[in-house]
Length: 296
Image (tube, rainbow, N blue to C red; front, side, top):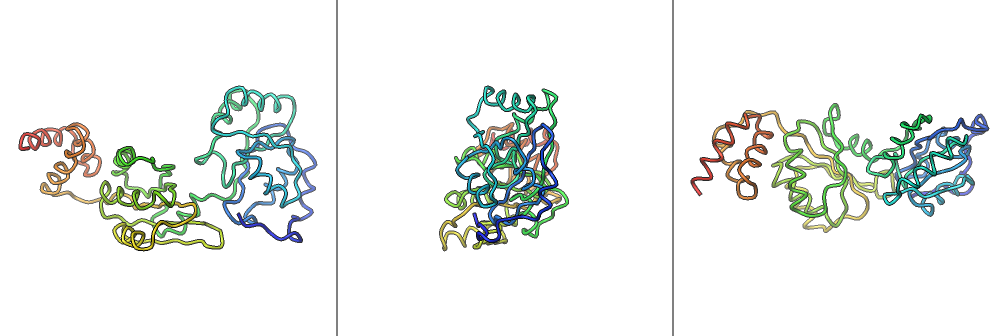
């Protein structure tokens, strides 16, 4: 994460406009790379909050230190249980203001926290959001792919079988898809995208807002060739995948797709998969898949 120099670490005096916060849960977005990408309202909230709930106190401590914020931090992550949530809700009910932040970006977007928000709402405490940086949105904006409709699908599964099954579930959606991936798994992920989703355009956005930010957008086959030649990239990666094309499938294309699907899927699953891709009725494709299976 990029930090400002010491002489730049103060924000305008407007921050003093909030001497205290109403008790409640404040979901605060933090920078995704460049420390200057934080809102004045976020700084005001973090400075005024009684408690700051964060994934890793070491990571968040660097952010707070850069802006001379001396808040009380308590950890909350994927391993936190109901007891920890009860503790946080109790603080709010006792009149304290609690700010929830993640290591980077907008909390709850592939980060822990939704159970805490749900419990807070069920308990009737005030919950509000202080919006800001998001790798999902930044990657989508830079991709050059349609942004009027998109779906964020989180991290792709680690293992190939699970990843391919996951991609099949989304293959028929005619909306841009946004996912997170790591450098070491990128080439395998691109290969599975090509195999399951076909010849689509994909954008690989990495190190967003940082010094070595890079966005590479091309046909998935070109990206595969590039990373085979150059090796796995470093840094955090956002994958933006072109949505399914609105096309009319020929009978030959339908049969070819079913034959390929049947190599790795059962008859019903193959029919459902091709139906989602093509828009053809599942019952029709199931009957055709049975016929094709009889040919093997």
